[in-house]
Image 1 (cartoon, rainbow, N blue to C red):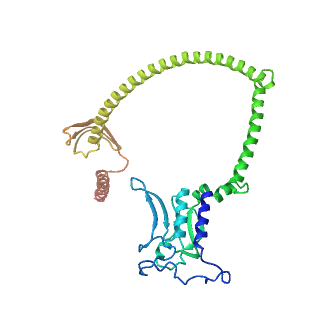
Image 2 (tube, one colour):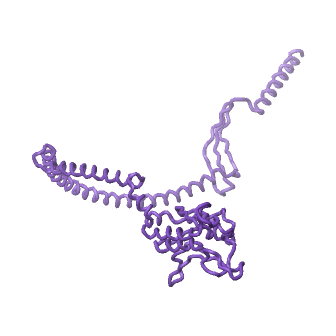
Image 3 (cartoon, one colour):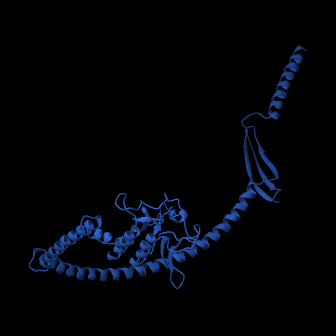
Length: 345
């Protein structure tokens, strides 16, 4: 922009009195140690290009009425630096960073502050580091502001070969193509509105069919609703019957549980060990069988357990029978001996 022209004027003024060897009668420089000598160290002398005789460095920092920083534009202790810093302020920059790590002069720390890493920066260079017209100083400004405020940035934005402008041009072409496509689609839609097209005749036929199907479906739905109401009534009746059955089942369950409890008590009594008294009256006792009556008393439960007639069939010989047969044989043997003795007399 035009205001940057002032920077070059300042730089031009700063070089007055410095000529190449052989051109004038003055030497290349007077041997000053630029950036290291001030009024504070050389009494009664003002160093060339120094802004004032104050011992210290000047920095361009401004704030608004609320104390919030509005412009932080770095150090400007010398005329050349002040010219550049003031021009950046006039142009509207909010931030600028002085970074010259090779500088080791009086206020080296002000020139060696690390640059921020979260903001894209653009490097600006000019002659006049620490007031030395032969030394390059670098100032870094936000790239976004540089593109907006500087002539170079604006010209770069107008360059059709930049990525941004290529993207914009590509988008413009795409928009034009999309417009053509949309117009063609609109024409197609208008054609679709023609009732004489095959598609619209088909759609109209389908519309009539859908209307007929709607009437049929509504009739069926009415019939289904009637049947559903009847079904619901039957379901309600069945639900009531199921409730009655459930009540009867619960009652039967209670009765069966009581009966089962009584039966279990009887089973427990049956399975319990019993003390029994058995009395038998023999009526007839033959060789192969015996007939008699019996009565059994349950001493555990203190009641008569059973009574009746008993027939006993004899399969083997009892002790008495074997004893009788033995005695019978002895009697027969004795009779034979007696008869023999009687015959001998």
